[in-house]
Length: 628
Image (tube, rainbow, N blue to C red; front, side, top):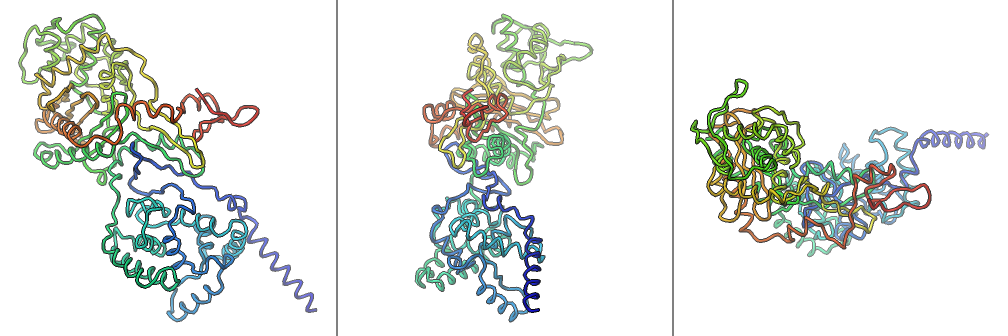
């Protein structure tokens, strides 16, 4: 009878186990397939950390400093290296402590069990989940081993302030690589595992201090530190200044480039490191001049927003500001906002005229003109009669430009704009010559870059190269397409027109004291004000206005935008040079070091194309490198 009862008990236990474990994804748990993580870097290889949730590159076990491993094990699971996934002694100790306290003050879960909760099981406290947790814990210990379990845990744990994983937390709180943490910093991060939202040092420095002291004491009890070493680490805590790292200043740029980086990473598990064109020094300058201009003059001039884009003549975007304050509004006015470009559009009218055979010395009549009941007026209301094309452009004469566009043909003006890279729909109406069809700042700036480069169209781009984890090869990306239209027959005349604007025309306030060329633009009733131009090495566009389209108080392209442009250029020239050559390091990548990967062409050609290693699967044999 007893044997029968025992057999029945075994059957019941077996049934319970089968019921609890039948839907466990054993293969996925064993593989530990890492979620795709995109790691953005600035042009010089520094981290580009976005606002909000952030996960850094996955770190291998040997990249974690011993002080961090010791701190985590001392405070979270002191017997981790000796138990088999479940720690009966820890469970018993936690039960006694909780019973004495009359509430749950201590947990008995091991790091192995915590990893299972983080990545593999639902958080509900049911019998089925508890059975799964215990069985999977034993199985993982046998299948993976201690180092792999701890590595996965340290890469997966949430540590507050949007940081998932210790590498991300090291960057968010200390702007450091994970391997560079000292004892005090390691203890702080280990302490966050208990309550990351409540104890993170940015929001609760005193709570973080107390928790760090607790971790250091645990390390002493665990014989990982001497009392003197712990005291020294506590003293070091007073010198810590946890804060969000400065690369977060590039958040508008990161938002713009992230979809392209995601296309490269695809569903590839693990980290894909994407080096971008953003130059931190120039980004800081851009944000400073925008903020300063709006803080000092914005209110009195009725201007609440501004945007700035800076790129090389080849289209590599080195700085981008999408508004006054990213924390207040993440809307990217440099990329997403469609606004009337005003007289900056006149570049395309005069380019069309040059293509038709006119010269800068040919004359056009600047006088009242009426077309289908519409009569454009010059700023100030005065007219100059017969003027050269050069004078009409430099003085931004509206009537003369409309007359010229009528003579050249509006269809030719539209074609000229598209040649230089304006892809948005353009209405071939008489007012088009004065910039009434909407464009965005990024596209308009890249059109001016075409003039500076002498080839068109220049397409803005922001990714230099990328490398997937586990892959030894780095691939360059570069421009989306090579400019194919030769502007050399018209280049000197276009440069001359744009220089005249700065030297003697409406853009005199933009003059930085060195070679500069550009064009002012103001839309009707001062709703939009622009200055777009270039120096030898940089092409920069500036827009000023209001999101609700309300008029500003007399702001024109030759006033506030021109001054912002000038201040940016001057600061960019006077500060120390970048750590790399803008013309070579970004325009051509690193020839001979990293092959290029034409992601667009390859993905269109091969359904099996994988961007992370630039390969495709042929009908037979192993995967091959796509060389299109």
